[in-house]
Length: 563
Image 1 (cartoon, rainbow, N blue to C red):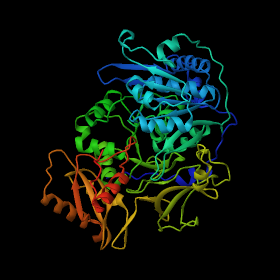
Image 2: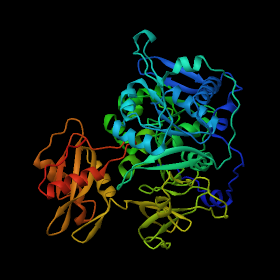
Image 3: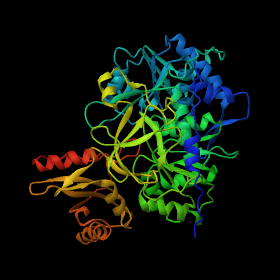
Image 4: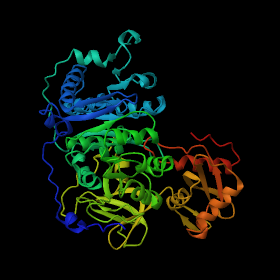
C-alpha cells in the first residue's frame, strides 16, 4: 500500500515570487562562487573503462579563465557566437565557463551532427570559433564557412600521434598552457544573451532560440521540484541527455552546478546494463531519463533492485509521454514516483510533478511549476475551460505580473518566427493538452502529430503507451497511413523486445491488446515491425520521418530507409 503524498501545491504556487538580480552570469553562478572550496567536486567523469576522474569547481574556474583569455586573444568579444561540439566531458563545462565569462554566446551542437547540419547552424549564427572534439573535427572542417575563423581541437591522442594543424586550428592543451589563469570577467546583465540552441521544427530549417543568463533562474523551480527538493547534502546527479540540448544543458548540467553539487559525465550511446552499473557505482540520487531510456532499463531488467544497490530518490522524465506502464514500473521496480515534466527550449521546465510536495497522477504531465503562468488556448488564442483539448501556452508574466525569466529572447535573426510564436503575451508551444479541474495537464501530443482517421481525431501517445505495455514490445510509434476511404488508417511501427519474433499471430495479439484497452477506432489497423525507430539526439521519436515514409508509399514511391 502506497502512502499518501502531501499536497502543498496551492501554497507553493501562490506565494512564489521571482527575484532576478539586475546583473547575473551563468559562469559566476555555476562555477566561480564554488571555486573557493578546493575540494568541492563538480564532475565525476566515468570513462567507461574503469577510470574515474573527479574534477573540482576550482579546476573548472582555472581552466575557464585560461580559455577565456585565449578566446579573447583570438578576437572573441561580447555577443560573439562560439560553437561547442563536444560530448559529456570537462572541456565542455570549461568552454561554457569561458564563453559566459566573456559575455559571448555559447552555441552547443550535437556531436551526432553531420556536415550539412553543422554548416547551416555555423553559417546562420556566424560563429567565429568552434571548440571541437577530435572525432568531430573532419565534419566541422567540411562545414566550415567564411565566418568561422578558428577551430580549437580537443584531442585525447598523444601529441606524437596527432596530425598537423591547418591554418586557424589550435590545440586545446597548448592554447590553455600558454594562457594566464587570471581573468577579469566582462560582467553581464541577467537579460543579456547567453546560449543559442537550434531547435528542429517540423517545417522549414531549424531556428536558433536565443536564451538569456536569467533563463537558468527560470528553470530552477522546475528543477528543484522535479528532483524532490534538490539539493540534499549527498545528492549526485546524472543524465545521459546530451549537454548540447536543452534537456541536458538546462535540465541537468547547469542547474546541478548552480547548486554546487557533482554531476556524473559519461559519453557514448545509452546502454541499460552500463547505466545500471553507473547508477550503483556513483550512488546517483537524482536523474533525468527520457522515456526511451526508462523503457530500455525496464526491458533490460524488470526488477533492478534485486541485483543493484540503487540510491535513487528522484527521477525526472520528459520529451515524450511517460505513460502508465513506465509510471507504474518506476514505482514498483525503482521505488520512486517518476516526475514527468513538460517544457521546450523557448520556455523550459514550466509544467511538471513533484512527488514530494504534491501527488502525481499517472498519465498527467503535472501542474504549472511555481513562477509560470500556463493556460490551454484555442486556435484564436482564447483560454479553454477544463476538459477541452488545446495548445499549451506560457505567459510572459507570472500571476503577480512579474516577468517570467524562463521565456526566451527570440529566434536568432528571425523576427517573423518570433512574432508567430506568440499570441499577445502568450508563448504558444505547439503541444496539445487538456487541463482537469485541479489544474493537472494531460498531454495530447504535438499539434502536428495529431491526425484524423475515419473522422476521429487520433493522438499517437496513448496508443504507443498501450502498445509498450505488451511484454513483446520494446518501443512503438504511431502515425497516419493515407487511405482513400477513411482519409487515414492508424499504423504502428513496433520494435520488438529481445527474444520476440515477428509473425501474424503477434500482430493480431497486439491489435486485440489495444482494442481491449482503448477506443475501437484507435487500434492500429496495420503494424510494421522494425529494428529501430528514427530518434532525435534528445531521445524523441521522429514521427515526421515515419509520416513521410507512409506518404511516399501512398504515392507509389520507394520510401526512404529508416535511420
